Length: 487
Image (cartoon, rainbow, N blue to C red; front, side):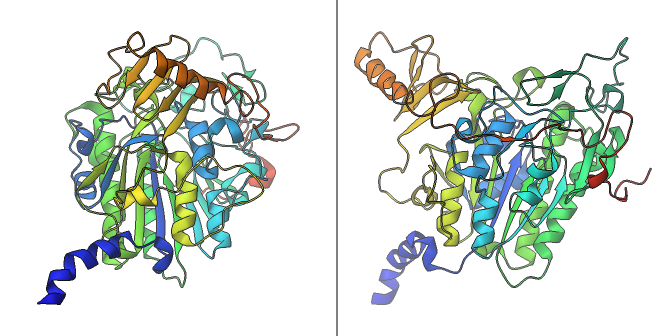
């Protein structure tokens, strides 16, 4: 009888044991592209997402999880455990044939885990450098299958400016190609390449985009089911649900909320396939899965960030706070939620701790270990402040529940006013002062604008070339056999 009475206490202690005290788990990140905060059911969305509802019921929602306003910075932050500006100091996103990318000297999450004995793989959108020296297989991943950047970065005639229910626009003249400070060619863009490892295996057009998420899902499930004698780290980054919207045939018209809703339904199916494969392989209780989005949803293209204010590309909460679920049956408490501050930059130190891996000691890491909030420890949250960068500019800062927009001086209490609707600056001058002092602390590190002393060098190459030239010629060292999408 005494043992029975102690069981609840023993169970709580097991849940809170440091992850290093148990066998090293498999680690999976599912990072959706442009998914709005409320585009899925667990975060109040109207789209039916039963698999994500189940994931949330079996896991823990992170309701104050921050990414970046746009994709390249967000993905650089995820890979390095740093504020985006520290490791990828660019004004926006990378475009095809960029001369710059994430510096190969950076230690990515894949490299840290690989050094700890993990098998590593990536499936999906990379978008932190498309030149050969910047590709995933040069940044710690044993294998790669996916697009090097967004699914809208190609010729309009290939359907990258129009969703599957639209005809490609008829351009009267080719747009002018512009190199944006070495970050790539915008305007006249080369054909969209599908890569396997470092080889081009297809030119992605409309038909390929329709089938792409299914291919990603099949590759992911095959990887999960493959026999191996060591733990794995798998990074899955679908191009869905970035515009143009290309839901697969099995999901077309099924949501009742348009193409975006259909694609969200397909994403939900993908999650179900992945978690189902883990259950079937008896890996569920030895695998941590983190589901998130790379930035807030673009409201003008149908995304929903309610109740947050703002859209992708902004530092309002709707542009940078993303729907996130952590799932690890038996370790992460089921059906729970936390509003503790967390973000992309915290994933590397958290995964390193869980895997028993060593963090780089020769450089600054901005992220913190989230393990206490993942398992619901009652101690103080590991993060109490956050800096909101848009490109090279610091636009806002948060300390506890208070957020200050620096240019306007508007102050919001994000617990009582998540929608940033009631400016409290007039009533809270001391808090405004304290937050401005916190922002000013960045002047000697990343700087408030421009390149600060704490920004690390970009990877940079002379004479960058597109993977597939406008005339269809594949870069010789990347030329592979087109086998995945026979035409």
